[in-house]
Length: 250
Ligand SMILES: [Zn+2]
Ligand SMILES: [Zn+2]
View 1 (cartoon, helix red, strand yellow):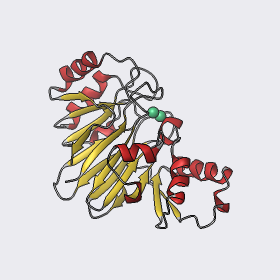
View 2 (cartoon, protein in one colour):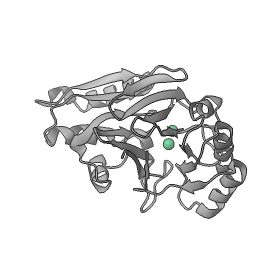
View 3 (cartoon, helix red, strand yellow):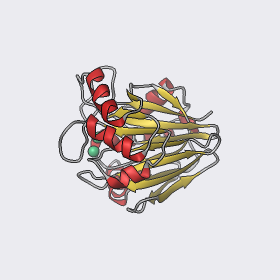
View 4 (cartoon, rainbow, N blue to C red):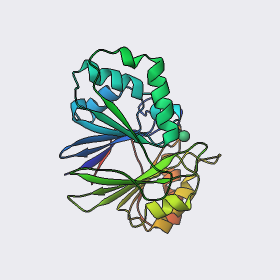
C-alpha cells in the first residue's frame, strides 16, 4: 500500500529530533519527494526508502528550509550510480533558482551526470503536476511570501486523497484544493505573513470537508497538545501534529 512519510516536521528553525518540513510519497512503483531539506539520502534510508527508487522531486517554493537539501541529493544520487532521468516539478520561480544554484556548483562539469529535467507547474488552481502508476498529482497556488504551491495527491490503488498546503496563510485556493481530502496536511507556523495558526489550519480543514487534519511546520518548543486542541475545536474532526518519520497509509 502507498504511504506518505513525514521526513521533517519543523518550521524554518529545526530542533533536536525535528528537521525542516519535507515528505515522501512512497508507492509500489517508486517514491516522490516533496521538498528537500536536511541530508535526504540519510533521511530516505531512515524512512525505509531506497534513494534509487526516487522517481521525481516536487519543490513547493524556493525558501531554504524547503530546498537546501536538493543540491547534495542531486550530487549523491550521481555518486550512488543513478543513470535514470530525474524530473523536478515546481513553480517556475523556484525551478529557475534551483537551476542557477546548480550552475554555481558547476554541475555541467560532473562527468556522466544523469539527466535532470525541469517541469514548471502552472500558477493556477488544479494545475497538472504529474501522473504515474501510483499517483495523480495536481497543484494550486497558496498565499505565501514568494510563489508557492500546495499539492493534491490521488492514490490510484486506494482512491484516497492526500492534500498538503505547504507554506501558506489562509487560502481559498488551498481549501478548494483539499476538498474532501482523506488526509489534509496543513502548515501551522503561527501568526505571521504567509503562514497560518493552528486555528486557521482547523478552519481550512473544516471548510475543505477533510476527514483528518495533520499539522506540520510547527515551530520548536510548541505546546503540541494545546495546538492540537485549538485546531480540533474549530475543525471538529481528528487532528494530529505530525512527527519526523511518522507515516500514514494512502
Ligand atoms: Zn517553510
Ligand atoms: Zn516558505
